[in-house]
Image (cartoon, rainbow, N blue to C red; front, top):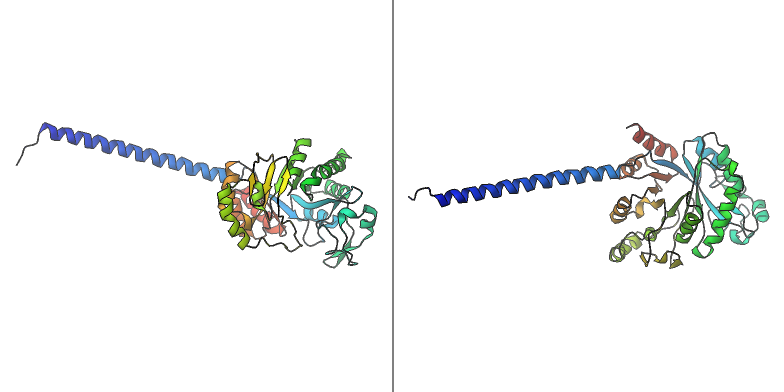
Length: 340
């Protein structure tokens, strides 16, 4: 049996040092991983109480009506989301669809953009067994301003890129026509990237957002290869239009504007969109889109959320607010976060 030599002692020292180095590296990796995990959790938690936004006002009332706006504040919403279009004589009115057929009590199906305000307001709309008239944006602003709850308004500007500048100017002029009657809280969004750019250029201090509901690739956050892979999944879901209130926010084709060429499932030659927030339907949000929003620290408002548990799940993921019709459930989820 060979004795224990000096060379053996050297080998033991080397092995021991290697083991110590490996252990130190492992500890460093564990610590770094823990820091990354803590950072990810912290980044996912919203810094403020998530906003509760009543989709087209109180769902018990006719959509986009003055009554729906008033009651949204009464039931605890932070904002009422309303849709804005221009009449043929350039007056901003609160109406969702391009045509009047779904809501007109007389069955007339007129294009809002080709109908003067005087004629449109003579038409009787009906929903939920209640008759009402199409309000102007000015009437909606006054309703929100006078609400005891200090209700805010989220304006969904209905336009395409071609008319975005004209529509934005008309909306801004209407809002600022009487600055003393502006709501305490106001946000603006649109599916038109050109409208987002125009509003932000003209009123940089306003909160302007991109409405990517029904068309999440408008964000341009997903690289083209990933967008193509997700396209099949998105189409298999059907990108179905139509919700409880006849949603028609789906878009197709190509949009050209200041931001480059925006395709339905990706962006070519686009720069960063100067938006303050993004609105997206919950069933359209992929893991890649959500991660991209988190990386950019972009506030995300999740649409068509009415279930308490679903709202709590999105809060844990970092949602900044919700659009929905069950305001009571959303209010409960948001308030529970604020008290935690």
